[in-house]
Amino acid sequence: MSGFSTHPDHDFDVRIHDALGNAELRESFHGAMHFLRDKRRTQFPDPNALEALRDRGAAIRDRALARLPDLLEQLERNCTRNGIQVHWAETAEEANTLITGLVNAAQGKRIVKGKSMATEEIGLNSAFEAAGFTCLESDMGEYIVQQANETPSHIIMPAIHRNKASIARQFHTQIPETPYTEDVDELIGTGRRVLRRAFAEADVGISGVNFAVAETGTLCLVENEGNGRMSTTVPDMHIAVMGIEKVIERLADLPDLLRLLTRSATGQAVTTYLNLISSPRKQDECDGPRQVHLVLLDNGRSRIYADRQLRETLRCIRCGACMNHCPVYERLGGHAYGTVYPGPIGQVVMPQLHGLDRAGKLTQACSLNGACGEACPVRIPLPDLIRRLRHEGVTQDTGSPVKGHGRQRKPAEALTWKIWSLIHRTPWLYSLTTHLATRARKLLPPWPRAWTNHRAPLEPAERSFREMMEQRGRDPGGKQ
Ligand code: SF4
Image 1 (cartoon, rainbow, N blue to C red):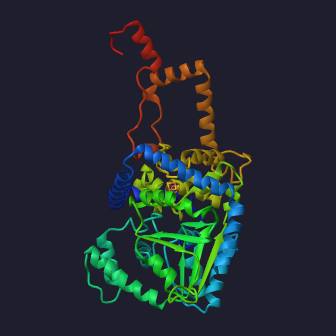
Image 2: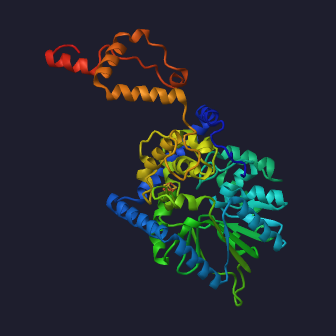
């Protein structure tokens, strides 16, 4: 899957360790996340207005999800009427076969792609490579990571882990006749020159879809660089790939969602480019693609949809605010997760897509501080969902549609929690344990290294809390 680990749990501890040990990376993410949080805050100066907007956003998404099957059929009808060819793909493999087939049929060889998380999810670039096609990422951040053979580390800012010096080195060594410069405008100019040529020569343009409007058969695409517009208008064929949850009822739903999306994602009041695509080029028009295809991707979403609570995941508008507000993501960066979707939304989506046996460990990378849930513009209860998936990871037979139940269970850990639970439910046992722990504290075994690697060792107090309070009752002014 486009260089992403298909088993995110593998080496997760190693990746965490590496990320925490990388001072440059931590500094980059610390600065970037604070910058994005501050920018978002300035766009929502009135907390009451923000909460009202979040309510409306969540309601729009809920209404659309409640009618999802009907809306998808309505979208298909209206797109088809407009001349957009609609295709359905149940799995990532089906989608890749379908898209490479369309490119083949058009005898396309050169492909440009706008930023699209759905195509990252299905590993489309790898499928193109296997089919012998060249696909160039046209979003500047995506272009940088593709050229470096890396993967995006954030769903909105794919190259956020990179600084200008490393990009300057990369462009200097990989793009012929490019002098070394750390001037950001010049670096952007260099990338733009390469991409302009690619747009002019491309046979096929690929894009994602931010929202698809069922009532009009319109595809809405939000972007800042103009590469999305170039990818969807210059080549003769445009293929849009979208998760089935992205459909909304009416055009009138768009303004609130766009307000929430751009302000939450990049702290912008409005996006630089808003593309509303309703048809291929018409007879009297002099530009635009001659064919527009829409691929509706399921890839596990129907399974998620079937569960009332998990369905809330599908409200996501992929703004990235939950990552920007997550203290764990801020310290680890996106690559440590080893998944297409990192951060809180990734911790919820990936176990549902891949199963708890393959991605359940991700749910542990959370302090349950709740910041993601408070930041989410469409009120997805991310902490509740993470807690639920954690529970299912260590419990058998919960009746949930998520695969791999109980596969995170470790016998020693389960036994420890059983003992902990028994002690805390039995007052006399609790008193005895705290009494013994305080008296014999010097004899207790040292704390395990995994705990004390990054923390000071804990040492029980001389007296238990209850004993201290009893002492205070007897002798209010005395030493505790
Ligand atoms: S879960 Fe919420 S905050 Fe996170 S990406 Fe989705 S919409 Fe944005």
